Length: 196
Image 1: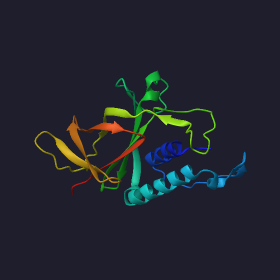
Image 2: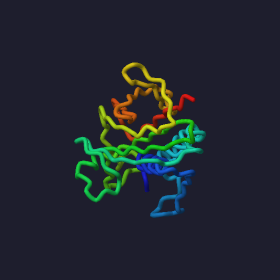
Image 3: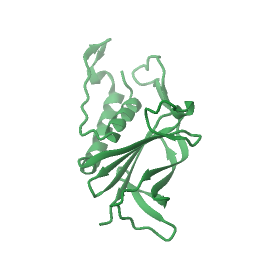
Image 4: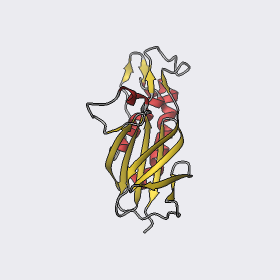
């Protein structure tokens, strides 16, 4: 059975590709597991994800997937599915770009540095899923020509995480929107509104 962190990564990967809906299901009595009631931690993560999706719904409803890039911790930037992926990409992160009509750009960032061991998790008391937090990651996304930003003289602009309402600072470098996150746990959401 999935653990909460695994489900979170799967849901955000789907949202990053432009998914318009999420449905959870579990077969009854699978190896003694009686549906979601057998996993209260997974049930709590589903509730949390549903609250987040509800907040993001107005932005996701118009969203179209535009780009995906995988970043290694050594600085390589490759498209997912590239046959020449460096081995350190599994310790990196993936960035998804979605355009929400002409209202703005949504960026979803997903940590790729995780493992799931095969040991039983003892109803969540011994989690099998483990991830490594990322510190000071930098990435860029293509700036659409229609996106108007309010920047200062250094090219800095303000974006926001719509889930936490925390400000995220970006900078325009060579026509791209560049971000540096001081910390990445499993996922991060950045909204860059269009100043019409």
